[in-house]
Length: 529
Image (cartoon, rainbow, N blue to C red; front, side, top):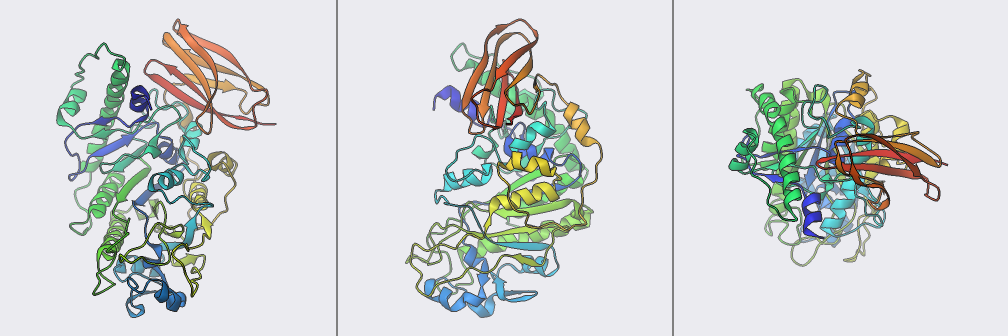
């Protein structure tokens, strides 16, 4: 990748002091993965919190199939938890939780946690990077998509973003990640709009509108772009700080637990009035190839500590949300890029595998239930055997989109690229109530590119507004490939039309992208036959 492309595609990092409880806060703008989640909440005040378990979690050590215990003992005798220590779940004697997960056991037994068994996708990847990319984009294993799984909804809800944002309709970040890492999942159709804040001088330069001149080098325009994005981030900081200051008392959280500290901030911002509807928090360390358990007590050790942190953090967060009066607004889910193999290795660990359980939690989750069944463990498991897939992870996404984030059914296939099954994760009483916010979001910001008709059969007219100078209009497919460049020249400021002939192009979703200096905007459009 060329340096210029790398700078354009990478998430700009803006240095600033820690903003909340020792954590930097990143505001994501046109990130397809994040923005569209909040876009989907136009007709609701529902919030989604995603808990990423980085490294590939051993699901068989988290949700334990007691009815397969004898064969499981043959497969992983050096790491298996004694059956007498497995935490029981109401309504079943066949399945239990790791003994460190008392908090999540309580949530399950009280109807606030649902467990989806055997979550994966066809032909899974065992590469951390590729598997994470698949989960973030909701692609098939044979596809490489340049948009996130919910980014494809962005154009339908906030069609003018990021031009003219923040605004009265949406003054706050469209999505927030707590912590210090930025993943490629936040790449938009044109640029990555994720922003990290970590250096004091740059922070104060942004606040005081101080900007050094760009060097007269080929990378000067790219540096100017990064600084422009940084200034937009600073516009959100006052809202974040104001929301945080509105909450002075919260429930108890475990100390020395990084995930709990992140979730505490999330609860604080939600209660504080921030309009952000998507939060991502991360706990790492799940790549347990060796020393997964204490050799003298398999119920303790490295993975047990991870299970304890995960369970205690989610339980404290759920209790805090309840105490703050926001419990009915929040649904969360856990995810990891893959599971681990059934058979343990000689190093007291487990190697990269395929399917694993996913937790979905919150007051309005149809909880206290298992979706799916325990995996069948053979008596002759080999080192190559994986937990079989029962549910495609994209079915969980589609279910949350439709039943919690209130995406219209006719939009789901466009967003998810396929029709995925509804898993019934949310209580039927958690219905979406129209509020008219959708219409306001459609008009918010500044519209600089559109097309009519849309959808269209063979051709459409693209209307774009330029401030003058070099202007480009390109057509992309969902794989991120440029299929047509309609405009690439100098223009006087004004509004223009260009005709796009789609003869010969396959039906499906496409993007029209305008680039004019620092301004860029992407519109989704569909060819139908």
